[in-house]
Amino acid sequence: MASQNVVASEAKSGIITVTVAVANPSAQKPPTAPGYISISRKKLLHNLEINGGHRINAWVDSMRASSPTHLKSVPSLSPEERNSWIIQHPSALDMFEQIIEASRGKQIVMFLDYDGTLSPIVDDPERAFMSSKMRRTVRKLAKCFPTAIVSGRCRDKVYNFVKLAELYYAGSHGMDIKGPTKGSSKYQKDNPSVVFQPASEFLPIIDEVYKELVDKTKSTPGAMVENNKFCLSVHFRCVDEKKWSELALQVRSVIKEYPKLRLTQGRKVLEIRPTIKWDKGKALEFLLESLGFGDCNNVFPVYIGDDRTDEDAFKMLRERGQGFGILVSKFPKETNASYSLQEPTQVMDFLRRLVDWKQMHPRM
Image 1 (cartoon, rainbow, N blue to C red):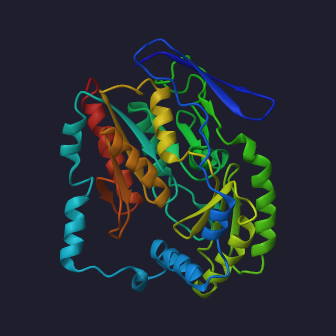
Image 2 (image 1 turned 120 degrees about the horizontal axis):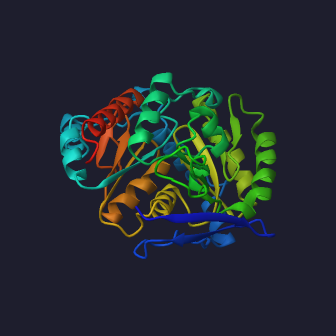
């Protein structure tokens, strides 16, 4: 592995810059702060039009498709379609031996989403606790391979859930990255912690929009706005499905005044993020480069996640032609992942098998 020093310096503008000293000349520098997605205000307002019934209905239909509240909400598939999906995205547990064979001679690097992957999805996002068995498994995993948690949550909040100093953490969909505590990871050695925050200039806007959303959505029972530092989440898991269109209107009415923010959605959540070219896929690429694997053929990244935002990482791995993604889902859905697992308990089983294999073959 290449020896690197990654140091963050904070400019007066509030933007974090990263300088990297690379001992191995074949390793690339981590990407510089990303550019902005070019979105004209006219186009943004067109996309966030709140008076068009067809548009808001289409948005709510999309919310239902990505956030089924019961089995009837799940698109019905014929047995042939379901079997075809399983053939294209087989269980990572069933294909474990083939996965190990594909990784032979390469350094495995693990990337894990949190909610729905390491912890079950719960009604109250503040209580999305991982089990003690999962924590022990992830700790053992980090002793075997470089391991990162990549989440839409605030980095500090994810760390408080996981409580493992030896991991890399990428919060706010990868917009807030920090490496292990010094001396806690053998992969980090004596290098300073990786620190990267490409959206620091957006902090005042995020705080302002957070206050507006809290005020605007307080009339919708069950709605919860979460401040994830560099992005915001509006949870509607506890909102009556009949109120989803009302909530979508409320959120859009706020966001339309902020053309530098974009609105996306996930499982029972609306996400508000800066319009910069940065996502979980970019975070994955940054971390690989920080570890010395930016331009390397002997690395095997594995990303496990359950939500739409994880698709950026799955896609990045496909484009790199290295490693693979594992989708955590009980239902077939469109994905760039290569394999599937149904729930966090299966994720834990897969991670345990990886740990057992590494302990049996320490030199591989």
